[in-house]
Length: 376
Image (cartoon, rainbow, N blue to C red; front, side, top):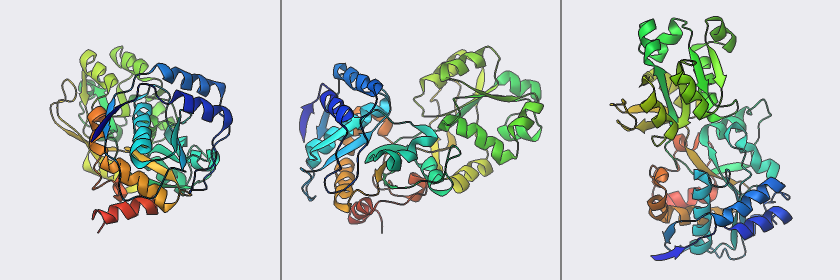
């Protein structure tokens, strides 16, 4: 093991890549996106002042020479949790797998539109939730045609699920205790979630789909769906403007912690049939939220979730993706030490269909998992 400190988050590399565009990736032949926006360049410049943690890594042996291979790794906005994790991964790939450069571009659209970046922008690597990656391949998302051009590398990186809570006043006034009873009785449930196209909102609309209810029907009962930010939903729940809040998030959610502290709510466990429908029909995983993650939540919750997965452009060669998979998996503990949200990542199961939304596994990743004996 050797210790290294990187105090700048690749600002100069980002600025160069965004201004000039990136060339194809070494042995992959993948094309890179054209120059990005001025806003993205400003984000890259802002990264120059962002401190990064100490990362300990181990040099990866038994891989091809990657010194002539550059990759472009798309991320969420500068300063976000996923951006910081991706920057750390990029440095591990450079330092321990010997990649020429792994340039982090904070242009990732996120949510349901994320899978389209591989074909439309020539992206090499990105975090994508497994379920929408599957939907985009099969039927398309956001009323767009199906897409492709990507394959899974590492599944189950984060432990996010549809954590949901409901006003105790609503439960008491309507003499119900489950989400199933709410829909069976056609109660006027006012749902709060984030904007359409987000994974959070998708959970709300999938609930309606499962129960065979349209948004117009929900409105006719006196309920509805309000799309707004987390802070606004927390305030709305506290003020009695919504009854139910759903968020695709983790046990570390600050918004859910705020709600648990300031609102009289119950965190709901969904029934087995509902959870299994999300898993079997929609490509989600079952995620366990430990008891006492939030005030008043004294039992564990098992809910559907679609964790972040690492996907690669299908044009990346087997050697390149094998090196990526091996390097990151062997340095998993070093990354988790700095980013606890990655603690659910288990290389031994990261290839499983349920962990990657039922998407195909890249041959380079499969080679590593078979070599390790994880795939029999």
